[in-house]
Image (cartoon, rainbow, N blue to C red):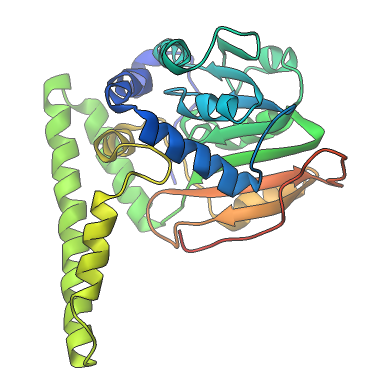
Length: 305
C-alpha cells in the first residue's frame, strides 16, 4: 500500500473537524447512550469510576462524553483545532466544566506533547491513528501512555488488499476535487455501496428460494439494520464522508496489529473484526502482566463484525 508521509500542514488533510461539527447537529441522547453501551461492551465494564481515560483523537467528543458519564476522569486531545472545538461543545452541552474532563490540542506523533500526559488506565483511539500519516509510529507512541495495569482500546482500518488500493484512488480523487463537487463523489460512493449490498441481498434471496427457505428473512434483517441507530452512535452520512475523504489513510491486518503490540508488552483482551469487509477492526489490549486490584476487562474475543 502507498503510505502518505506525515505532515504538520492541515491543508493536505481531510477536514475531520468540519465533518464532526456537522455531525454534532444530530447528536442526541440516543446516540450518547449507544456510545456508552459500546464502551461498556468492548471494555467489559459497567462503570469506569476512579479510572483515567485518555481519548486520543477525540473528534466529535462523543466517546469522551461517554467515558465521562461512566465515571472516568477524562483527558481529550485532537490534532485538528475544529475537532477540539467540537469536543468542547459537547462538554458544554452535556458534560461539565469540572476538572474531571480536560480538553486540549495535540498530536499522537508529538513525543514531547505525549511525554507530558500522565499514563492512563484506558487509552482510547478509535479510527484515528491510521489518519496520522505514520500509523505504526503513532500506535507505538500512544501505547506508551498506557499505565502498567491499563488497557489500550484502538480501532484501525482493515486491510482489504486490492479493494484498499481502489479506495486509496477514490480518496486521492476526493482531495483533488473542488469543494463543491466532493459531496457528489460521496453520494456516488454511497450509491455504489448500496447497489453492491442490494445485489448481495438479491443473490441471497434466490439461493434461499432454491433451498426452500424463507426468502424474506434477509430483507427484513436489512430493513431492521437500516432503521437502527449506529451501534457506536455515529451517523451513516457523516461516516461515509469520513470514509471517502479521510486522508492520510493507512490500513492494517489484525495479525499485524497483534504482532506489533505483542512485541511491545501487550496481550490481546478482545477483538471485533469486520470479517474482511471495509471498516475498522477493534482491539482491546492489556499490558503484560495485566494484574491489578482495579477492574480489568474480562477476556473475550469477537469476530465477524
